[in-house]
Image (tube, rainbow, N blue to C red; front, side):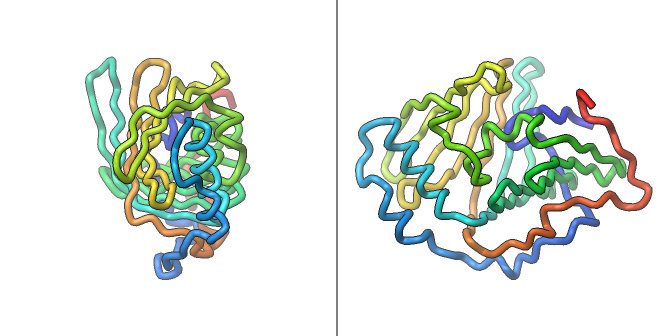
Length: 237
């Protein structure tokens, strides 16, 4: 089983047969509330304005789903692994990552507990979400915390239709060296996220087909171990 602390959106998870499935039929596209869109500053002058625009756009989102591609690079080994799947977020604090390739795995959180499920081995691990490396990078997507409280921001690149924002954690104990977002300025949503750990390893995610405010059911964010599943103790437990 891979490390529970291995990066921002973690390495490979998914799909548990027992958790109640998320119905793709209910994922109809919803527009960002007008109030949130109007709050986005029309021009960029400072990193603080970019952070504020990004934070405000997600404050108007109750739930979110998208397909993703992921590239995880181990610098020391010179190896890159690639994965694809679907991600779901729901406020407050719920998330689910369903990996389809190269193998089915799952990461599921109800906002309190983080479960990782590997159906090929019929094994899972659980730990408090507060002990994982995910919260710092993901809290604002999950409707918790503010980017400006956790990170120091720097604008790295501005192109037509997008801006790159580099975020450095204020806490050295975060396990994150830096986080880079590529943001589309049409809707102020994260199109690409890259996390670097202190060893220089890189976790890159590119999102597509995003949908917002689809009334995702809470049942899709709970994991019930299937009969015969074996629990692997998470580090520190």
